[in-house]
Image (cartoon, rainbow, N blue to C red; front, side, top):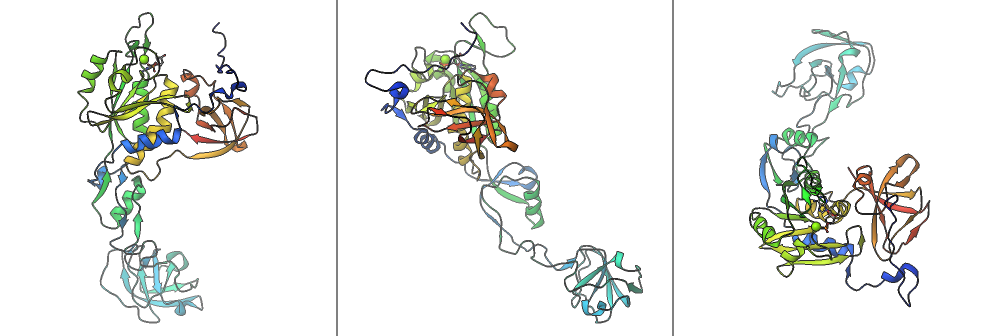
Length: 420
Ligand code: AMP
Ligand code: MG
């Protein structure tokens, strides 16, 4: 009986054709409608000021303009000799060396025609000089220098403002601050920067059958994998996540646990939202500001979202694949938008199916896939069922199968969302 997983297909209804019977189910909410509902729920946190040393990985709250240009002044790109290009038109030639300018020497020097100043990399160019002859093109003389190779004006000169002009927007709001961005802020003299703090999310899994990994299992029990999986996914999205592990399917226990979560920006629950009995999240939150709906999506049809006791709640289904796919589709983009990320969505690629697939009618399906980018194809990573966590762990993308597709042949073009 359990040898092979058969993807369940709805039986045809009288008077309707084949498996298109689910078309026009009035209660189904579209994926994009539910995405908007979740996005509207999660409030952006107020920016804070961070020292550059602690800004790594944070999201820039506002555009940053350059208070100074980069380079700040014309300077030498090489160790060598600052000259006038017209004085080295004919080579070899010799010029007297009248100044020695290391990096950091600041008084405004002027080059007299027919002379050279020895300059080090980063040293200010003397007024009147328009080229640098690298040391390697000379005999390295300190009183008189013999120059073998000529130069045109501008040779090895780093002009003020060529990289960044004063007043330029150097970093856009929503940029994730990494080493180059933090380096740039330091280069223009900044010590602090406005960043959006990460959202604080509590992950609350529900299910009487759940046992914390590491503990012995009794018959009928399973390990709670959603708590740590969703918390990890939240951290991957840039949020701060705490796992509250799980509560049993008991409304009083759920409410008592929830009452301790008042400090969070979002509570993310899993399980207890579908159509069976013992749907603890639905039972506890329905009619109290959280709405439960069926979304035209597979996996992940039952979803809940709203505010309970003033705290935004997103309630995901419990099947692990449904949970994580729902997270990708609804929670991750909303959380990243609320945290100010310019890149809130996963990168997507258009590829061809390496094999055919069947999809449920009138539902957007997210199949787990394995990409072969060199050939521009994607294969299915496991069956469609929402309990195939092993297959999900081997996938590197979600194949976004449009609502109107019930069958796609090998070679058909699909969009794939790249996972980490
Ligand atoms: P539910 O949405 O509560 O009806 O759960 C659907 C399925 O997902 C059931 O097989 C549950 O045992 C399983 N499930 C629910 N929560 C978790 C969890 N935290 N970790 C692993 N499996 C879960
Ligand atoms: Mg349950």
